[in-house]
Image 1 (cartoon, rainbow, N blue to C red):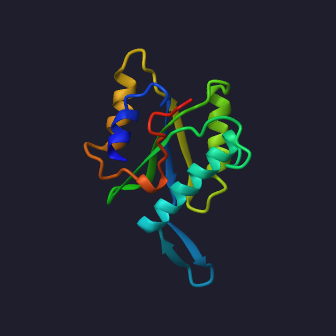
Image 2: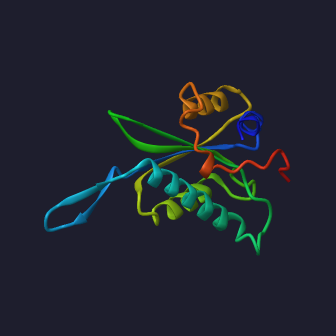
Length: 160
C-alpha cells in the first residue's frame, strides 16, 4: 500500500484536499453527564464509513456502479492541543463543480456520529505545484504515521 501511496501522491487525479474535524466525545447519559471519548478504532471506523458513503454518493454501490471508484487517501491527526481530525486527499469528478462536491461531502459527513460540523475542502492546483505539495506534506505531517490504510482506497494506477 505504501508504494501505491507514493505513486498516487504525485497524481494530478488527486485534485481535492479536505479536512474533517471529529467530535472528541459524545454524551452517553444526559442525567449524569457521562461522556464517551473517541478512540483510534472509532476514528478508523468513521473514516471508513465516510469513504464508503462518499463513494456511494458519487458512483453508486458496487453492484450498480456508475463509473470508476475514485481514490481516497486518509490521514488522521491528533495531539494534546488539537482536536482529532482527518485530512483526505481525494478526487473530485470533473463533472461536478467545487461547491456541489463540497456540499456532497458535508451532507455525507454530517450523517456520521463522530463528525463535527467543521468541514473544509480546497482544490489542489497542480499548475503551480506548490499547493499539491503543501497539501500532501501537511496531510503526512513529515511521516506516514498518520496514514489510515484501512480507510484509504488506491487503485494501483488502474484509474480510468
